[in-house]
Length: 51
Image (spheres, helix red, strand yellow):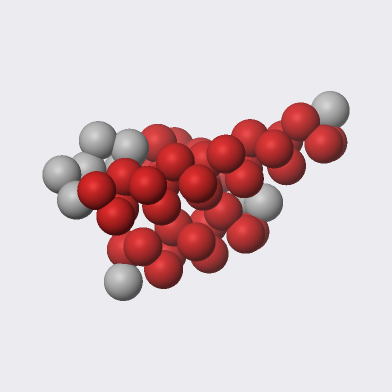
């Protein structure tokens, strides 16, 4: 379920979710860490497009 939430967060484009996504970069589950990395990359990419 957390992985799915991270995918939704990454697709949302909401900068407000960057903090919670970053918090999961250190999760003990590799699947969660990878999803958090993906989501953060998407969110940071959206941020760069706005600037």
